Length: 329
Ligand SMILES: O=c1ccn([C@@H]2O[C@H](COP(=O)(O)OP(=O)(O)O)[C@@H](O)[C@H]2O)c(=O)[nH]1
Ligand SMILES: O=C(O)[C@@H](COP(=O)(O)O)O[C@H]1O[C@H](CO)[C@@H](O)[C@H](O)[C@H]1O
Image 1 (cartoon, rainbow, N blue to C red):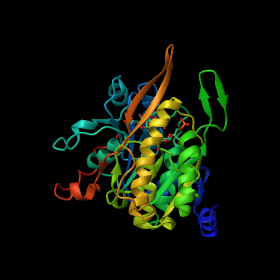
Image 2: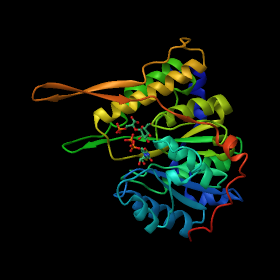
Image 3: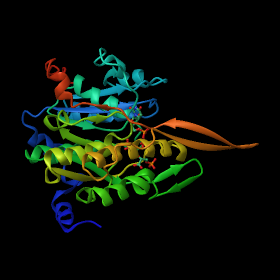
Image 4: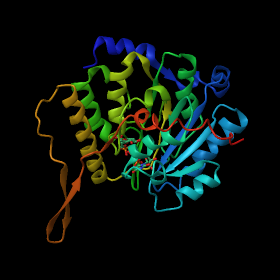
C-alpha cells in the first residue's frame, strides 16, 4: 500500500503537461541545453513522424530542443533512413564506443546515447508511439527547467491496448500491472507513486544519468527508477501526466521474455538492497511453450541482463561529447 510519505510526494511532485506549454518551457530554458533521444529498433513506421513533430514544433517553431538523436538499435528495416530524412541525427548503436563489445537491447541504446549527445537535460522518447505530440517533451522538461533541484521526471498516461481484433482503453501496460507495480509496491514502496514505472518517456539531468548504471535490455526503466532514487532521493524525482499514449504492442510471449529481464533486474536490485541474501542468482533463462499439432514445443530464452557502468566512468577518460551539434533549424 502506498505509504503516507509517498502520498505526500505524489501530491507535490505530480505535474500535468497542460502546465508546460512550449512557450513557458522556452522562457525557463536559459542556457540549459536539451537533447531528445529516441531508441529505435525496427520503427520505420513511426519514428519519422515523431522526429518531424519534435523538429517542427520544438526546434524550428520554438527553439527549445537543441538536438534530436535517434539511436538505431540494430534495426533490420529502414529506421535509420526514415529518421535521418525527418531531420534526426542518427547513430547506429554499435558504432558508438566501438572499442567496447556491442550488446543487445534498449538499455544499451539509451546508455550509448549519453556518449553522442551533450544536452544538460536528456529526454528519452520511445519510437513506436502512435499518438505522439510535442507535449510529451515539454511536459517532461518543464519541471526540470523550473526546479534546479529536480533531477528526473517520468511520464505517465492512460494506456489503451489496441490489438488486431480488439481495443481496450485501459489494458495497456501489461508488464507494469502484472509485474513491475507489484514488485515496486512490495519491495520499494517509496516508488509506488509512479503511475507508469516502465514508461519509456522520461527526462533527466545528465549529471544524474551519467552516474547510474544502465541495464542493457528491457530492465532499463525499472533499474533507472531504483538506482536514481538511491542516488538523488525520490523527492528529487517527479512525474508528469502526458495524457494518453498509444504504441505498438508486443505479443504476450514477448512480454513474458521482457518480464524475465525485468525480474532478473529486480533480483539484482533486491540483492543490492539486502532484500534477498541468497548468493545463488535466479536461473538465467526461461522456457516458453508453443502449441503444435503434436502437443507443445518448448523454447528456451536467455533473460539474464547485462549492465553498463555509469557513463561518467567511461567518458571520464575520454572527455565529454562536444556541445550539441548545430540545431536542426
Ligand atoms: O533492443 C531494443 C528494443 C527496443 N528498442 C526501442 O525501445 C522502445 C520500446 O521498445 P518496445 O516497443 O519493444 O517495448 P514496449 O513498448 O512494447 O514495451 C522502442 O522505441 C523500441 O524501438 C530499442 O531501441 N532496442
Ligand atoms: O509497460 C509495460 O507493461 C510494457 C508493455 O506495454 P503494453 O502492455 O504493450 O502496452 O511497456 C513498457 O515497458 C518497457 C520495459 O520497461 C519499456 O521499455 C517500454 O517503453 C514501455 O512501453
